[in-house]
Length: 233
Image (tube, rainbow, N blue to C red; front, side, top):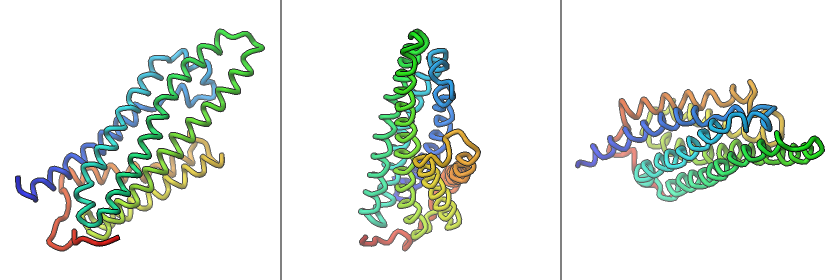
């Protein structure tokens, strides 16, 4: 296999993994846990909660696979930046795994809540609020921030090397900065996970990833003799 065909294949599978991640991400949403009445709805929708956990688990190899596929491309420009990109992806997926583990606890807690005496429900609700806060911090701060920081490294390399159009790299910068901003606004309880503000801040990143995915699938990387010149960072 020639060098060019190998890079083209990397671009193709990278684009597919981006689209797969978006699709799986949609199915990983668990409305019962996000609901204000989650202590009742989680037990009533047990199968949906567990299915959401399964799809969230599938996201782990999907996101890691994307980073590992691009590592050889990024490392041609800077090995240290390539390690940083993959490292942030690994950190993000550790948080993702913690989030997956937490989801079945909501089912257990909900089952305890609906059968508990009225006097015991206050304690269960208090624990439930702590559990939900922990999950929000893990999923929407840990995962989003780590992924966003890794993506900023990736788009810096893309911008410098012109492997993709620079406007698409800039779009990636903007989308990921807004995503990181959203995660910190959640951290300080300025916005909630299910809110118009969160959707508004997240939409540019989703749109950019869709465009990037189709660009990689259809056009691949812009390769030339000089755009992957090694750089010591």
